Amino acid sequence: MITVEQALQHIKNITVQQPKSLVQMSEALNCVLAEDIHSPINMPPFRQSAMDGYAINAHESNHYLLVGEIKAGDNSQFELKRGEAVRIFTGAPVPDSSNAVVMQEKVQRLDDNKILIDGEVKAEENIRPLGEQIQKGEVALREGDKLNPASIGFLATLGLDKVIVRQAPKVAILYTGNELVEPGTPLDYGQIYNSNSIMLQSALYELGCKSVEIHHCMDDLSSTRQKVASLLDDNEVLIVSGGISVGDYDFVKDALEYNDVEEVFYKVKQKPGKPLFFGRKDEKLIFALPGNPAAALTCFYVYLLPVIQRALGAEDFALERQYLPLKEKYEYKGGRALFLKGKRTKNGVEILEGQSSAMLHTFALADSLIYISGEKSNYDQGDLVEVIKIK
View (cartoon, rainbow, N blue to C red):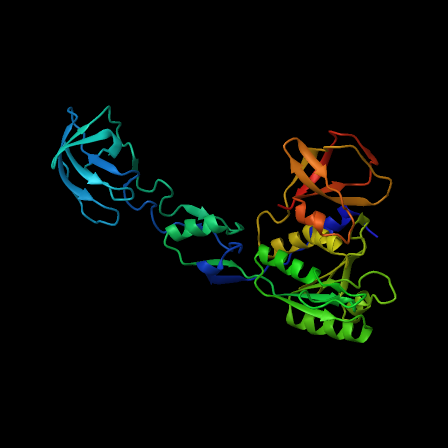
């Protein structure tokens, strides 16, 4: 058995990286850029009005002669003389001969072609300069940046419809257990609903994995060996849920050894999630997670997520950690490290009730994992603890 810190060091040593792939922008959400992106244009590509109002060529008087109108999308190019103005709308191109846009609330229309400006006019006010947001050739986003809705929108404003990203690994989730049935079907006595597979699939989708298949295997040695073999052939990452402990019907460890999976580590001195396995077969990555749902999800966030993120080339491949004061006193007598479900508050972090490894309700309410290293058994209110942000 190894410590949490030793297990995390093994995770940090992984060097697998996915190949590059060109994808449509509409399919790029949560993907990680494989190259720097340089802006192909100035943005905005012309001097742009920030308001509905009047573009003017300023002179000494507040009276101006109105000579035309420019709407957004127009390509009219007026050459304004001093004392002339055009009606202009938000987003429209500002003539080069204009040195300010006056908002319409500060302008009185005297007749069809004359206006009066109330107050002082500042040079270049309400004009977005050429390339204000980004200039042609500048780096828009960098390799390793993860694409979110805002960054996708930003790239679209630059005219880009495709990006080069790291190809997401093909992942298989294998859940084991005779007692598991799918949600939506009636339960017989002794059965429970399978939640781990769709939970892990959802977490992988959130990371940007597109191909995540789910498979089931009964608690049988021969079928477990065969299922592991076929899934290793067809996938780059295999995640097994359940069957990795030392019970009479836990066959996953044997099946992995039978299929020549090299063990990197097995069993971590932590709670929940002690019977955690991580291994490799050539370039393929294999995780066997505990069957208890909260234990499985804890192991995913702490160990598996950083591996997937690093394979995708993400700059920040692990979840953010910070130190926050505990909201209440906490006593712990065990020797293993703890990952407790918690919720951040204005003044620190609180430990939620219901920490059983079989319970997901608390996890659904939590936004953090609180790491208790096991080196200290008593924590007073206000003591600093390490907090992993999961939301």
